[in-house]
Length: 432
View (cartoon, rainbow, N blue to C red):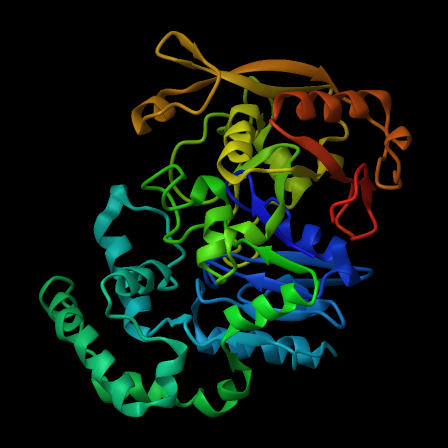
C-alpha cells in the first residue's frame, strides 16, 4: 500500500487530527514529519477529548505504530509530559518510535525564541516561543543536537559547546541575559537518555520495510501550507516544510511511494499569529459577518497556546493554491456545522489587488498584503446537521455550499465534518 499524506490547506488548525483518526484501524503507521510542539491536534473520541502537541494522532489508535520522523524538532520535556498524560488516561504509548536523526530543542533555543520575538516588537512574527525556529536554524547552520547525540556524551558536549560559543555572545551582549553553561544543558538533555533509548530507531528504514510489506503509512503534517517556510505567507510562517514535499524529506519516504494527498480545509478560515489574512473578520461586527460569533461557535482557540484564532471566511484561491502545491487528490472539509445559523455565507472567490481582479494567490508579499476579497454569497441553513451521515441528509443549502466549494477549490471533497466526534462525518469517497 503506497503512502498517504495529510496536509493542512490553510493556516493550520483545520482538523488534521480528526482526519487521521477517521482512517482509524486501516492505518498501520502514522508519521509526524515536521514541526514540534508549536502546534497541536484535538481529537474527540466519544466523550473523551485529547489535545496532542508533539505526538502523532495515531498514538490514539490501537495497533497503529506512531512515529516522530527526522523532520521534527523534539522538546524532550514536552514529549514525556505528553506520554505520561496519555498513559494516565489508559492510552498505551509503548509502540512510539522516534527517529535517531530528529533534532532536539535545547533550553537556550527556547530562551532565544522568546527574547528575539520581544526584541522585534511591532515586527514580530508571532511565534509560540517554544524554540522551534532557533532549533531549525541550528539544524541548517549545522550546530544542531540530534536524538542520537544523547547516547554519546562526548559528541553531545562538543555540539553544545559549539552552539553556545556564539549564542552566549548574543544572549549577554545583545539581550543582556545571563550566559548558559555547557554542563547545564548537557545535564538537562542526558536526564532523558535512558527513557528515550528504547524508542529510538532508523525510522526511514522502518517505514521502507513497512511499505514493502504492503502496509499503510500515513504522513501527518504539522501546521499547514500557508505556514510552510518555502510556500507559505513568508515571513509569517513556521520554520519547517509543512507540505507534501516536506513529508518526504521529514520521513525518509521516497516521493514515488506517495499515492494520495489529503488536504484538510475548514468550511471557513482561521489564522494564529501575525501576517496577512484577506478574509479576516476584524472586530466584533463586520460588514460580512460577526468575527467573534464565528470564533465562539467554532471554539477557535489554539490547542497548544490557547490563543484566540483570527477568523474569516472561506478563501477559494488559497484552497486552489494548496491543491496545486501539494498535489491534493482529496479534500476533507471540516466544521461545516459551525456555519449553521448564518443567513448568508460569504466565500472569497478572487481578490481585488490595487483595482485588478486576481484569481490566484498574488506572487508577491506586497500583493497579498493589499489583497481584498471578492465575495460571492450563498444562502445558509438553520437545521442541526450533526446527525448527517450521507450527503442527502444535509439541508439543500448545505449541500449546495459543499458542491460549490468543491467546484472552485481545485480538487474533489471526499469527506465533510459535521461535528467534532470521529463519527460525525459525511464520507463521499473512500480516502484510502
